[in-house]
Structure formats: C-alpha cells, structure tokens
Length: 279
Ligand SMILES: NC(=O)c1ccc[n+]([C@@H]2O[C@H](COP(=O)([O-])OP(=O)(O)OC[C@H]3O[C@@H](n4cnc5c(N)ncnc54)[C@H](O)[C@@H]3O)[C@@H](O)[C@H]2O)c1
Image (cartoon, helix red, strand yellow):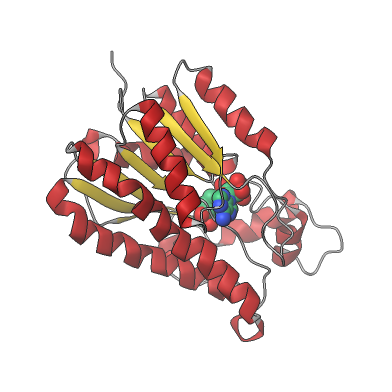
C-alpha cells in the first residue's frame, strides 16, 4: 500500500520542534520527503517561550530518516526572504521537486493588552507571524508552478485567526492576516491547480504554551502555576471537555490538505479546536 503523500516533497517552516516536527514526521510516515527549516535560536525579545535549538532540528531529521525518508535541513530565519529562498532552492535541488508547503513557524507574545503593546513587540509579531508566512510561500511557490503538477499550501493560522482572545491582540491580528494571505494566494494560484488552506488550531501542547510564562498568563492568581492549573481555564474555551489538543491532531489535518483526498478543497479555514469557535 502506498502512503497518502507518497513521492511528494514538503517544505515545512518551524520544523525543529512542536507542530512543525510533528508535521514532518506525519508526512514522512505517509511517504513524503521533507525540507525542514527553523531559526533554532532565540529571536524574540519579550518572551518566556524557550527557543528551539540546532539539536531540536537534528532530532526532527533523525525521526524522518528513521522512517526511511529523505530530509534536507537548514537553520534559517524565515523573516529573511533571501535566506529562506536559498534554503528551499537547495532543498529542491537535492530532493527533486516541491509539492507541499507548510508555513508553520510562529511566535507567541508577551501577554500585554493591545493598548499596552509596544511598537517593537507589535512589529516583531507582524514580521514573524504574518510577513514571514507570505515570504515562505513566495520562496517555495515558483518550484510548484515550474513542476506543473499542482500542489498544496497549508498555512498555520489559529483559532485566534477567526476570533479574538484578550491579551494577544498582535497575535490575533497577525493570524487573521494569515487567513487573508491564504485567500489571496488561493485565488491567484488556483489556475495552477495549487490549493491553499489554513489550519486553525486551538491550544496545542507544545513549548509555545507549555512554559512558565503562559501558565502565569492563564493563572495570574497563583504564585507558581503549572499545566494542571492552566488546564481548567484552557478547557473553558472548548465545547469538548479537553484543555488542549496534541500536535498530531494538527498534523492529521495538514496531511489531509497535503494529500489528494482534499484535491478540490481550496481557500478554506479548518479549525482543529475542540469546538472553540462555537463559543
Ligand atoms: N501551541 C499553540 O497553542 C498554538 C495554537 C494555535 C496556533 N499555533 C501556531 O502553530 C505554529 C507552530 O507553533 P508550535 O505550537 O509548534 O510552537 P513552538 O514554539 O513549539 O514551535 C514554533 C517553531 O517555529 C520556529 N520559529 C519561530 N520563529 C521563526 C523564524 N522567524 N524563523 C524560523 N523559525 C521560526 C521556532 O524556532 C519553533 O521551533 C505557530 O505558527 C503558532 O502560532 C500554536
């Protein structure tokens, strides 16, 4: 039996850990080779989220190789268009083609209300979570068009790209913008049989929320909160009685969009949100 993305090549940003790593592994399990990029160092000024490392990216590479798939890795800041393009170009040169782009890299924010957000933090958020999504697609899409086989582009937005949460206005604005990028690319690239969609996750159990700063943001009433203290608050956002989803839940949605099972689906937002958008 062949895999659901057998013989395809996927370019994934933010692939050192978290959802990006999970997407790399899930797509590799179903037969894809991977071009994986990540910045692998601290880049955010006002954050409590620990940075990813070169070792994280190496671990993603080992996991993909363990599935007998090929992987090309590069340490790249996706805010840098030229460096991102150089990485994709090298990856395609090695792996031969490009069929799937997963623009997943992103940062959280410091938890300020919008009226207290500094211009620096606003700009940093927009640069990473909005502009870099556009740059990542722009860097990869010429290879898809040149391949003449169509393709699938999946952008990681958020439930915060469909509705607002307090204390993360710059994130919400950027993630709404990602939906706009998706719709614009979808209407422009449809003629090439290239589909463009977003996944819109609720809380996902990755270092982005599993850190002290986020626990404190959710439980300002406690001195030393942990994940168990955050869980009941997270669960209040949901219709299903769970606090968060796992990276593989998002990867399965990414895989569906990447595979031909969704061949005529383009321009849609797919919440993987335990019913958060119902509330
Ligand atoms: N975790 C959640 O609750 C949640 C919910 C909804 C959406 N998201 C989104 O999902 C995506 C993946 O996040 P995650 O949960 O896996 O978090 P994560 O922090 O574990 O992973 C994000 C990865 O992106 C990389 N990255 C960040 N900025 C980069 C840059 N400029 N260049 C290259 N790489 C960069 C980081 O190094 C890290 O490895 C993000 O876009 C995030 O906004 C996360």
